[in-house]
Image (cartoon, rainbow, N blue to C red; front, side):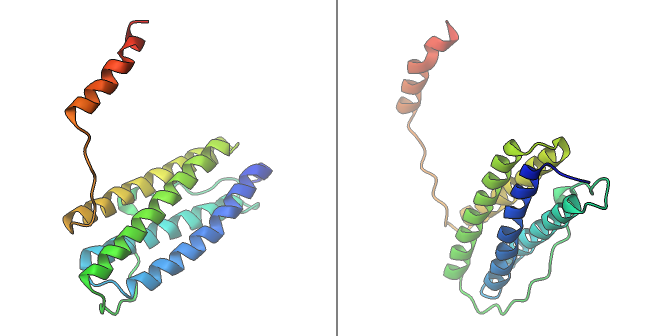
Length: 172
């Protein structure tokens, strides 16, 4: 399958990011202690490897099509090497890093998908971004459970001000 050159370029920029991220997660897993965090790290590597496999499939000029992205729940998890010498504080920092990198990868996939020309390649990258968002939600939940995520809430008065300010659009 031959891709538009722009799609080839975008995928080519994704692959080194995945390569580096997989290695970083493997290193972080050696410092993680909490079992749930290790599951999230294993899931992240599984997602990244799944995405790499699909992108390499997309780039193979001898194939006429590429494999579909597996569903989030069907992605095999890796079994990363661990030493469990970390601390709860270290686990929080690892989770914060994984949250930030997962969010960045989701954004990158969404933005790249908007630029891609091949419809199936575009749709697959949107699905890749959505998988990253699912993982992001899981990591955010982990951080909340460990009191390491603070999300300030607006006030009722401030929200009403915004609604009142923009309500004219519903009448025009």
